[in-house]
Length: 174
Image (cartoon, rainbow, N blue to C red; front, side, top):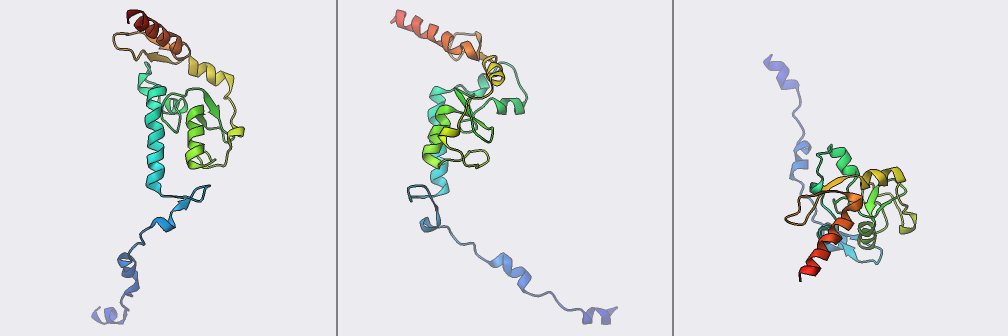
C-alpha cells in the first residue's frame, strides 16, 4: 500500500493559480459607448433607470393599489417593465413586451433603441398599441383611491374621472 502511493504524481500547481489571478478593474476607457460616443458605465445606466422610476411615481399608479391580490405573473403582465408601475398608455414592442409609452420613450433616449426586457432591437416607430382584449382587462382592474379619506374602489378605466372629481372639490374649497 505504501509503495503504490509513491508512484502517483502530485497535482500540478497551476490548478491553484486561477484563484490568485487578480481581476482587471474596468476603468472609464473600457466602459460601453452610447450612440453619441460618450462612455456609459453601468452605475450611470442604473442611475438613469432610477431617475425614470422616480419620476414615474408622480405620474403612474403603483401596483400596490390593486384591490385584489392577483398572482405575481398576472401582476407582472399588467405592470411596466421599466418603471414597475401599472401600465399607463401601454405600447407593445415587436418582441411582444409591454411598456408605458412615456417610459419606453425615455428609455430609448437614455439607453438606446432596444427592448429593456430581451435586448432585441426596436425603434419608436415599431411600437404598436396592445390587443383590445388586453386593454379591456387592464381597464377592468379595481384600484384603491389614492386620495386620503376616500375609501372608494375604482376601475382603472374610470380612475382619471374619479380623481378629477377630487380636484374639482379641492378647487371649490379654495
